Image 1 (cartoon, rainbow, N blue to C red):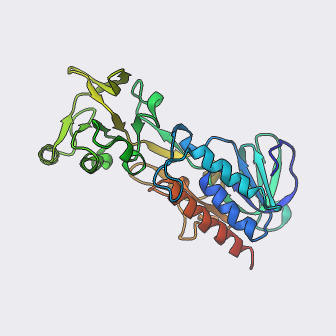
Image 2: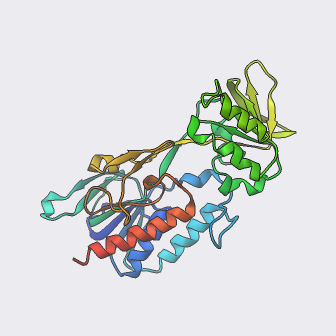
Image 3: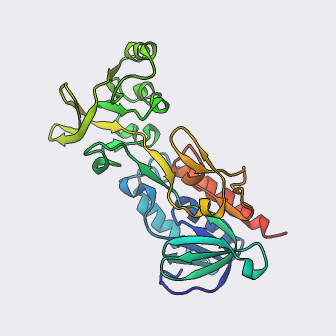
Length: 311
């Protein structure tokens, strides 16, 4: 693989934009099909804030950067793959070539050409604007109980809601701990009936505005609220709002869809977007997001892109 920054005028069968779990999984399928693949990655995977990946078959508890490093090293053994540490800034239909191919511009000034594109750009987590929240993201402020709940089981757990769509997290966390506090950060919009149901199940509901998230020697997370005592926790689950990390899909004309917590690229079951020849895999293409899903999506997109080249 080539990590250098240079003008790459070679034509490839497929350019994979994004070299984390979905992108590497897609590239591996194409490499094994002996297709020419360019993987462009800027080295900023979404889970770079997490110390360990959990629930990933055969890799449970291992640091994500170690898993990716090994995966990329394995990809180096395939001679038809090129890896560029760069950022894809723009992609267009390559009309000058007279076919349904694509040109990709890179921040280094390089331009690459391919017959197919796989967008594995991932997403950006947008957290609520509360002092101290972002600084603890991935450590004691968490997003997914399936990814991190086991490690904080039986501790003092909190949920910071982001609209009604995240209310389900509080009763779910009772499978990990009997000590769960729901912070609505304002009036409880779901209604008194649902509040009573949560409290009956043992979930403490705090409607005071959250003013800051801190920590001390006795508590990894302290939620400070207006007009009440601060509440110490062992972990705070704070679902983020996500958006696609790169504008390339939208600029190409790929249809987007909006869900309760995220904006994603619309794809079919083979991970092809609304633009023929452009595929999207991983977090950018799904509402339910974790490493296992990303790898599966990458495999699907890689195989589908390869089969599309056979016609």
